[in-house]
Length: 353
Ligand code: NAD
Image (cartoon, rainbow, N blue to C red; front, side, top):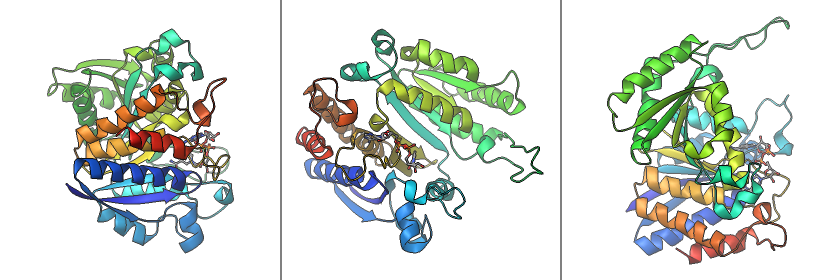
């Protein structure tokens, strides 16, 4: 197949891991007979430096002409002055809003070889394989707010419409159908009216997916269940803020931020794919970043935007094989293990495709 992929390296370790992911996608294209065209654009701090805008119109144009977007990370100390008028993160929020990327998918998986890096006991981490589906363009982060009150009070509003809940619930149910057919919906229906609408709507949507088992959890209970029985979850769907907090909580189960991918999708096949980690300024330029989160994001791009399931699975198996062969970047190297560079790890993965 022919596909155009917008490549937005961004800042810090972004360009280091995106560069390797582009090489990996070229290896996949060669092996499976596809024609991938990569078109690079600027975003984040580098775009502010070059154009004054964290999301220049030219980058939006490149993304609009593409089948999917692969992004590294944005931000860093150079642009972190909170009083600055433009922040690198605006570039990312701008992309999500411009393309109405309403469903954020974040898989969290534990690797047997890496459980020693996680803060929970190894037996609790057996078979952890969770897919978070977070609503991304509504809820309290986008509700009415009083930005500058009189200094003594302020407010934010959590509001959801039925259609917003329906569309993200549909993504979650469909994902569960392709997995272990279990969905846990997280809300705060005992206190919040918007969350009662959330729960009612999820129950209604379930009528179309009677093969999927549905569980509801209040968000406070969910924070505990994620630590006491993480292996029992399949797909978890939540609103914007609860999904943000819970998926960050669960990310520690994987042992390193560098391991985690994400996808932000709209109703058609278009999506933005990026690792969960940031620009890691503390290790940028050293060639030691873990490329796994970025590689798994590229695999998600193949799976969700290009519908190339075998190719996606090939990347995932190649990563498993590299880990099984004992290769570890510094963030996941155990005592007595000599860490390999980003380059060495990436080369090993590519050689196993
Ligand atoms: P971070 O994710 O960049 O780093 C947190 C810690 O994890 C650091 O010690 C870092 O070295 C380590 N780490 C992260 N990714 C790694 C990888 N691939 N391999 C090995 N180690 C890795 O988070 P932070 O330090 O809070 O933020 C740094 C900058 O990134 C900030 O400017 C922040 O705003 C930005 N940020 C951007 C995104 C994004 O682009 N989506 C997300 C989070 C943070």
